[in-house]
Image 1 (spheres, rainbow, N blue to C red):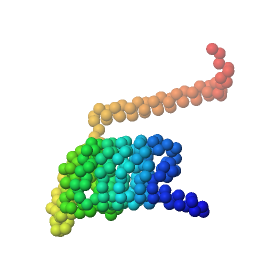
Image 2: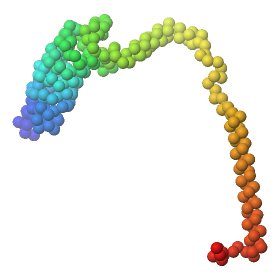
Image 3: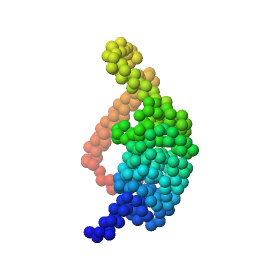
Image 4: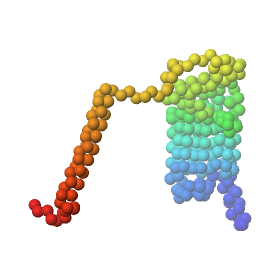
Length: 262
């Protein structure tokens, strides 16, 4: 393998160079890139990423980034994922005026006040700084009740850490959470079985059993008349067959259709 090519590949993995961005997207012009996935490439510097003026969707998760400076130029960026990096400052994102969704779990943000720089983003409605299942968080997420602080800081945000806190469906989401907590509490104190023993059926016994369909007198009369008409038709058919057989015997066999004269 060419040592020069090897060193160039290593440099690209540490820096989001123009060559790397074009190779990842197949685009010939940085300004025409709309979606960019640079997950887990060992990138330490964002390089010329700020030149992707039309970029709308960006995934930088699983790298070694410590700052996001060039992203301040991305006015069209709507979705950003920077999970599992070493970021301690989100100030550059204040320039991403179109940003709607931010996932910054698994970084080094130590104080909720570091998020003040995002309060001017009018379109931001989905943020994540803690991801329990993935074990990705930030130091400030250890503060008791920090989601309430974020709700006050970002009144327009609808989803925090994957939980809907406002907007359509938030009431149902909160109701389900409260119900889960209540059931868990009853189960912990052994009251769930007692509640079940006292529970009464909502409706009378047999309410859910399928009842036979009721037949009205009109429907019964119609069925009766139909049956009588059917029997009459069958009787007429038998009489017709009998008359045809008699005629054939009188004529001495089945006549040739071509012998009829009209």
